[in-house]
Image (cartoon, rainbow, N blue to C red; front, side, top):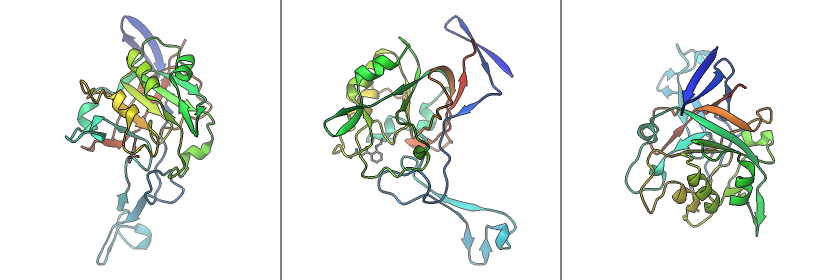
Length: 249
Ligand SMILES: N[C@@H](CC(=O)c1ccccc1NC=O)C(=O)O
């Protein structure tokens, strides 16, 4: 199912029959990925008096209640509303769902006690001079990223100087396989987020950050089209399902 895309006077071909899903499935148990000191998500039959939303227990339908937090429990896309006093909804601010994207793999550097993605590392990894969306895969890239419990582990993060480089390259949608682009315990500074959204200047309302993606090793670095959509929650962040399509030669 080939599709031809014309963008900025260039033509690209992708195969819609070959989607590469880079989201992490959300499960209602302790094997689910986790961060920010919450318990695991729950997916349980709704119960109300004699009613049970579970066919195996005599109910007419399976009818689960789901409890989760978009920032803590899986792949989610957030807008500037994550850090502003006023409300901004990612469901309103993400107004297109297809982007040309580059996927890069980086090995974070050790700076004092932290593993960080620096400007130098990112500059070395990126081929594009200008790109709308960037997916950062960090090494090592074990499948433990699908179920890891990150609280109190001080995961790798992205330095503001690296985010500056992304702004220079026109990146509006940044995707990472980490719980956050900022340090876990930074006293609320969120400096990479603030740089990305130009928090102290002209708010970049239509720019998004997607955290907790997982890019399997079989997907090689290079150029893709990215289909990025969120569940239609009116919230600063929402579960999302980024899908890549390889650009064919
Ligand atoms: N580092 C922040 C906390 C933080 O970044 C955060 C907290 C809850 C949910 C998400 C967070 N950051 C996400 O990108 C702090 O130490 O206050």
